Each structure stands twice: as C-alpha cells, then as structure tokens.
Amino acid sequence: MEEKTYLYPKWIRLWHWSNAIFFIVLIVTGLSMQYSSQDYQFIPFSQAVYWHNIAGILLIIDYIIFLTGNALTMNGKYYKVKRKGLIDRIKKQFYYYTIGIFKGEKAPFPVNEERKFNPLQKVAYVGAMYVLIPLVIVTGVALLFPEMIVHKVFGVSGTLLTSLLHIAVGFLLTLFLLIHVYFSTFGKRVSSNFKSMINGYHEGH
Amino acid sequence: MKNFLLSIFILVVFLPGGIQAQEEERQEIIEEVKPRNNECLECHGQDEYTYFNEQLGRDVKAQMCEDYIVSEEEYYQANHFSFACVDCHSSGFNEYPHPAEARFEQIYSCTDCHGFSESDEKYQFSKIEESYKESVHHKRLGEDFSCWSCHDPHTYAIKARESNNIKNIVSYNNSMCLDCHSDVEKFEMLSGEKKNVFEHHEWLPNQNLHFNNVRCIECHTEVNKDILVAHKVQPKKEAVRKCVECHSENSLLLSTLYKYRVQENRQKNGFYNGVILNESYVIGASRNEYLNVISIVLFFAALGGILVHSLLRYFFVKK
Ligand code: HEM
View 1 (cartoon, chains in turn brown, orange):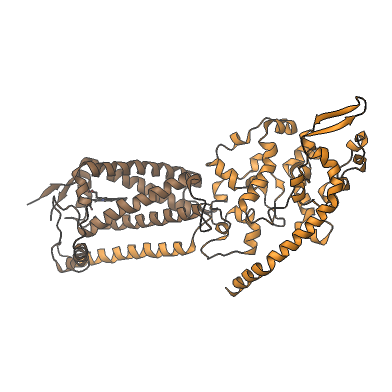
View 2: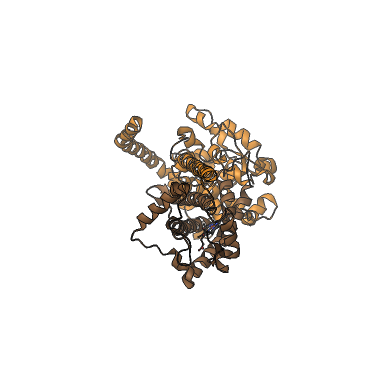
C-alpha cells in the first residue's frame, strides 16, 4: 500500500526552491568572479558582481522567511537536535549508508511525522542553515559595505580575512549542496524525494 | 628564513642609527638655508602680510594670493628642502618691493636640473619626459601645462619609492589630479570645458572605495615598463573601463601601483600574493593558492565518493 505523509508545507517548498535558485546563481557568479582572468571570463565581471549582489540580497530575504517559518510553525521542531545519544545515532545512520544498505537492511530511522530527517540529515541541515548560511550572510553583507570592516586584524587586511571566510563558507555550502542533492535520491525511488519537495507529500518505502 | 632573520637583525640594529644620522644632516642643511628663506617666508609663508607703504607713510596689511603661499612646514619636508628660494627664483626677488622684471622670470623645469647625475639614473627622467610629451596634458595644453602643474616643487616629496603605506601614496597622488579635476572652475579655466569627475565616475561601483584605494593613473595612463610611475596620461576614451584588468590574477595593479614592491618580493605561492602583501584587497587578484588546491581536492573527493556510492547502489542494492 502507498503511504504518503504531508511533510513539506507550501511555504517551505517555496522557500526551498527559491533558495536553491538564488544559491546556484551565487555559486556560478561567485566562481566567475574568483577565477576571472583577462583572457577569459565566464560571466563579465561587472555583470557577475551585479547578479551576485542581487541574488545575495534575495537569499537574505529568503533566509528571514525560513527563520520566521520555523519559529512560527511546527516545522521548527525538526531542527532541534537532541544531544543525548547523538553520536550513536549518527554512527547508526552512517553504518546504514556505508554497509547496511548494501546488505538489504532497513533504514534505521524511517521518515514519519515525528521524524522528518534522519540524524545525519538533521546535523547537516542544522549546520548549513544555522551556522554556514548566517556566516556567509554576515561576511557577504560586510563585503557589500566594506567601510564597515575593521581595517586590520593583526596586520592583515580585515577585508581580506572577511573575503576568505566568505569564500571558504561559500565553498562548504557548495559541497553541502552536492551531497544534499545526492542524498535526495534515497527516497522510495530516485525521483521520489524531489517530487515530495514539489507536492509536499513524502512517499514511504 | 635565515635571510629573513638576518635582515630583521640588520634593520633593528643599524637602521635607527642610519636614519638618525640622515635626519641630523638634514636638520643642519635646513638651519643653513632657513635665515635666507625666512626673509621670503615672512610674507609668503602665510595668507596675509604687512608692508610699509612709502607713499602712504604707514604699514599696510594685505592678503597673499593663494598661489604665492609656501607652507614652511611642508617645504622643509619636501624634496627640495635644501634650496634657498632665490636659488631657483630670480635674484631680482631679493629686492622689495619686487621689481616687475623679476615677476616675468623664466622658471626652470624639472629636466633643467634632473637627469644628469648618476643618482638620478634610476628615475629615468628622460623617459618620463618622453612619456609626458605624449600625454593628453601636453598635447592639449602645450606650454600651458608643465611638470609643475602636478608636482609643486615647494611641496613635492617622493612617495611611491619610499613610503610603505599604499594609502598615503594613493591619496597624495590622487590629490595631484583632483586639485584641478575636482575643481570645476579651475578645470574650466585650463581646458575650457565644464566637467565633474565624480559624475563621470558614477558608473564605477563603490566610487569612494576606488578613489581612496586606487590611483587615478592606474586607469588613465599607459603603463611604461621602464619608469616607476607612468606619465603618459591618456585621453578619456582610452581609460581602463574593464573591471578584470585589475580584478584578476594578472592584475594591472601589479604592473603599476605595486610594481616596485612586487619586483622586490614576489611570493607566488605564499599565503599572500603581491597585492595582498601591500595591505589592499582586490577581488579576483587575491587568490589563495593553498585554499584553491584544498577546495579542488575536496570537491573532487566528494564527487568521487558520490560516484562510487551510486555505482555500488546501482549494482548491489536489491529493490
Ligand atoms: C538543486 C538544488 C537542490 C535540490 C535538488 C534539493 C533537493 C531537496 C529535496 C528533494 C528535499 C526534500 C528531502 C529532504 O528533506 O531531504 C530537500 C530538503 C531541504 N533542502 Fe534542498 N535541494 C537543493 C538545494 C538546497 C539548498 C541550496 C539548501 C540550503 C542551503 C537546501 C536545504 C534544504 C533543507 C534545509 C531541506 C529540508 C527542508 C524542510 O523540510 O524543512 N537545499 N532539498
């Protein structure tokens, strides 16, 4: 029998896909700026700056929607990490992905209304949404208004440090995206979870 | 590392002594010329002066025209500090009131004195003059424009070679240009055109930041390998307008603003490249080689992991 659970309310789906679009624009324009050269620019530098700024500002607005949504609705509870036994749970999930799955074992933390994310997923989402995104936003805003930045930190340009942090965090988020998209294929079928994120219903195994 | 420690040692032990000796010598020279110059600076050192008007038979207070004021403080810090005023100005000025002929004196230009001695060789005066002759300043204004128009001999101090502070070099340099170019009336007097530089640069993102951190000549001159500071100022339409000329690994800035230091010390693979060493941050020109390598390795490791895992899934996970 098909079991379907409504797990992704409309607002989170809207947030998610607009966020994904802005994010991809940021990655592409960011890479283009970082690796611009006189002979070859993927996107003309001034255009890349322009669209990076626009997408960045839209992503911030989106992030505020995400925070507000999670604060006001039940969705926020899925992001609460219980410390007790966390390591064990992560180990279990890790074992499943590396060995269990190939032995035909059942997923240790099946998705249901109380538990939308498995432990690894939860840690990754919390890390991305509550640590990395805020960092990339703060450093990004600082670079948008460079006059705000401390001129020197131990003799090194404050702007340089801010920019290195911005780029490093941006890169980690890009890795997150890559891995995130791959793990989205672990639904009932490869395409199931993508469909869920569009229609809101999770398909059980 | 050894060399580095050695140079630190030399710097700490010998430099202060050397600097002090130089400073003492400088003070001695100043003491020598001061009495002669004080006669001039008594009037020309401030914006008002008093003289005895024989016809009226009393002291008269008058205002000194701005162009004729020389700040004593700046003068003795400038490169020409060792000269007495009348070394360069007509001796007619020794008389007071100054005779009319003295006022029509022919003034020396830089290359009347510079470019002949061995110590001048590194400055390449003749090449500077050559470049200048091709600049828009000379082509448009001819004799109405000269070295002095930018380099006031009373205040000129060499900066690009000697200052370590890029910000100081930039603001000193740009003030030379902005002196005329940001003064709509002065600019109109010289060129007959009414223009506002700030409006003309509105297309430039973060205009303030650019004006404070980059010299005007970075975009408005043609770089000349042989001289440190390019002098061929180009007409407006030939200015650099492409961001990547500076914002890229082979930044134009490395061949102009940071040229001297880059020549001395180019750390290609260090934590900083030449540009960052000089305290400024330029997007795109400031790639960090280590982070680059780490990020590429991590990215492909993740991609490889995903590929292997999906293949294993494809072959071994039974549905
Ligand atoms: C092409 C880009 C993306 C695709 C295809 C994609 C796909 C998905 C899918 C299928 C889900 C639902 C399944 C699940 O919960 O794991 C999901 C959820 C989620 N994604 Fe993405 N994603 C993308 C980009 C991003 C980006 C850039 C971020 C954040 C930086 C992100 C953060 C999240 C979060 C936090 C959830 C859980 C939302 C919730 O239910 O509360 N995603 N994504």
